[in-house]
Length: 355
Image (cartoon, rainbow, N blue to C red):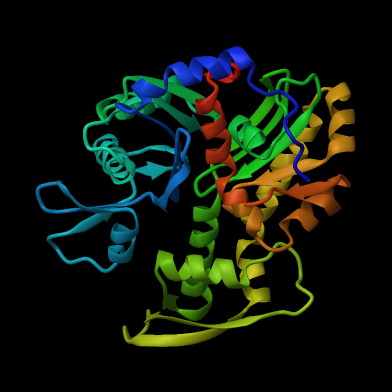
């Protein structure tokens, strides 16, 4: 499915990299996929070095006591002296101070030399982000210690991550379904010809499932349980073999713990409205695409990335709706950070795509 990149760094650029190798000992250059649900970090010459939930546990003074996996384990199980915060909502920073704590803490986790400092940081952002939101991302990265901060659009990073040559005069449609946003973009000649950022993603599907249990079973479940139900039972179209799962929660009538048996058909119905919104957004984007690029998409198909691409039969539903080939990227969860990492490794080559 993935297309190999035709362009490679020139020998002169390779020589420049070798010259900088001594200074690299004192600096850490990183690329960050700052996601609503998960944050991934790519370190220069080392690849992906961190993949953790975007969540921070704070004490009463507002100081972080846990970040990432440790904070996720505490989520929805804390007492009055500890609270958990997800600093990103809908793909952008909602809590500036906590986001800074999170970025700084995650960078600290991946530093291999205590004396090294962060020199360059490439951060991917939603394509529909405002200038104010961009400024918030830059400020958070700079306050976390970065000397130079570069931003790249998520769908562009995803396209690079799955091996597409974004410099070609050829149209590629990428649909990146993350935790907070769904990014749809048509890419050609190092730019985004058309993009649509829908503030709907995996978190919204979780909310749909929570509301379904509250409405149909009088059962209150948490985010973690909803995520598990989505991963195990969620689908966009009927499965060859429908599945069942016993779900635990709190009975809203008498307040005691209860279990309920649900099927994949129930969950499909619960998330159908949000899934249909994503598919309609893809259709709308195709309608806005210039005809010559539409012809390229007809030949090459639509590429799905992000955690939402793993929803069972989503590719099948989009294929049936658009009558176009649909490809799920290899390891869609890391496509964006892999692309952001490639930009970091060769900033000069990808200079045109930086925002």
